[in-house]
Length: 130
Length: 130
Image 1 (tube, rainbow over the protein chains, first blue to last red):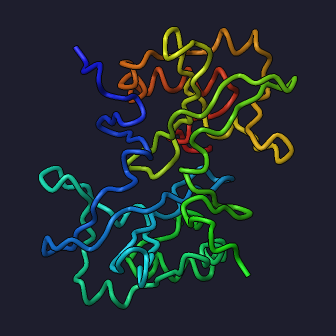
Image 2 (image 1 turned 90 degrees about the vertical axis):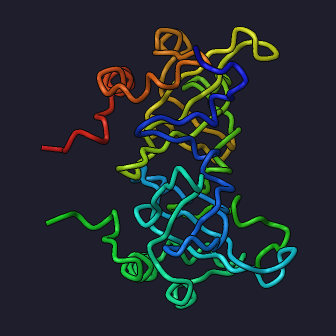
């Protein structure tokens, strides 16, 4: 039996999750401190990959808020926290690339994108594995 | 200057689009008839791919509504329609795989998934290109 109150768009299973369920999920650092919330999932229209999960961080009523684009692979889901863990200290995250609300267009620049992936120790999805 | 009223999560550019912007977008057939609306974006947690865009179709107040899982590659964005076009007649779509609200778990079955991809003439993202 499935819970009939569960909306299909919020269901997940072993390998699939709805983007609507990811949005708004808390993000923690390796020490369990809350860093922020998933603000947006950016999809590569051509490749069909999740290019970035953008995490909103800090600020108050939208003022001073920062947006960190993260490679999808850098987020590990933690069942107990019901959130994602980024294996990075708060200090390391402070040094990570951030975007303003009006800067999302920068993400289409793959040199900038490669720097983001490199910061988190991941290979960009658009670079074939040798 | 960018419109400061634009929320970052709804912005798109040449190659990237926010999942929040995809959800709720209309889907049309090749004849320009409206087929339905994007209900959910299902992400493969491990691979980081968009596994399916699930389109809601027909029904009234949620009764009799059907959910079609579509490979991301089968959706072509049409600027003039401000919606996606599936290159398929309404009759062909009626023969396409559908899911009930409680059946989303079936999507994790890759044999079922391969049948969906095959119906739309696409190779599943989890099968390496030879």
